[in-house]
Amino acid sequence: MSKFQDLITHRLQDRIDAGAMSAAAVRIEQRGEVLLDWAGGRRDFTAESDAANTESVFHIASISKPMVTTGVSKLIERGLIDADDAIVEYVPEFGLHGKEKITLRHCLTHASGLPDMWRRGGNSAP
Image (cartoon, rainbow, N blue to C red; front, side):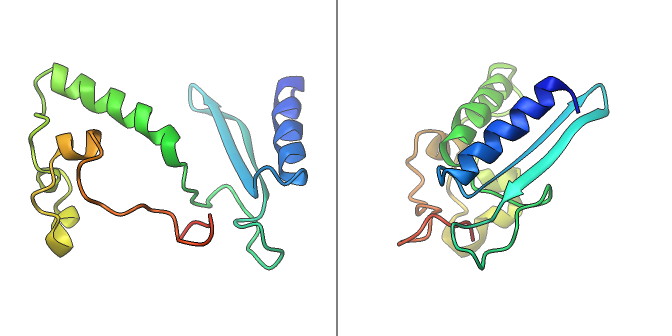
């Protein structure tokens, strides 16, 4: 492991050990070559929680917003999609349970009416 990779894993493990986060996973690739594939901690802050691994799914919460918004904005800019398109045009399953009229614009402006993804009373992922 390189000095840089060692620094990344030690800093993440230090934050886990300090209780700042329950788990972390990181994968770094360069031109298809895996340079680092690491996971540490538990899926939840409880001792009986499953250990995190590189296949664990985490809620990344607000950090996804700028990434998704940038990508969608580029597609709108290029005329490939429209902000007023219904999500079901791209993800048909999304329309289940009365969500068929929710548009990209609704989601981008937090006006979709979708509930918060976090469980009430805790921060654990579903």
